[in-house]
Image (tube, rainbow, N blue to C red; front, side, top):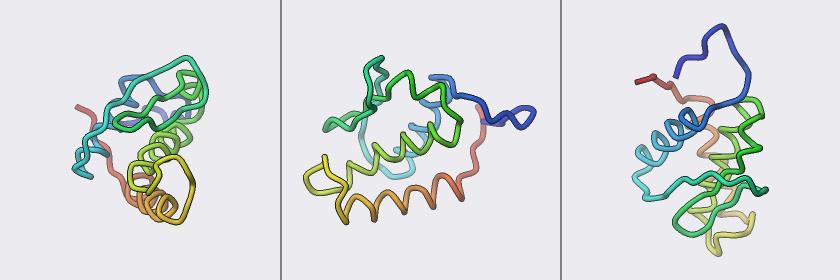
Length: 105
C-alpha cells in the first residue's frame, strides 16, 4: 500500500485486510478477520472482529488496533492485558508499525 499524497486519512476494508493478511502470513498464524458495526474491536479465539467505526480513524490508529487484537493470540487467557500480551504487542508494533514496508498489489 502506498499512501498517495501523504494521506493520513482513514483505511478501507481492503487496506485493513491487506495489512492483516500480511501480518498473519509473516507470523505464520491462522486467524480470521471480520468487520462488525458493534464496538469495541475484539479478539475471539480464532478471529478478530474490527469495528467498522474504527476504520474512520487515522491509518496508524487502525493498524495499531489490528495489532492490538492480534497480540491477544499470544497471551495466556487471551482476554487480558498481562505480561505475555504486552511482550507480543510491543514486538508487533516494532515489527509492523516501525519497520513494516508495505507493497501494494
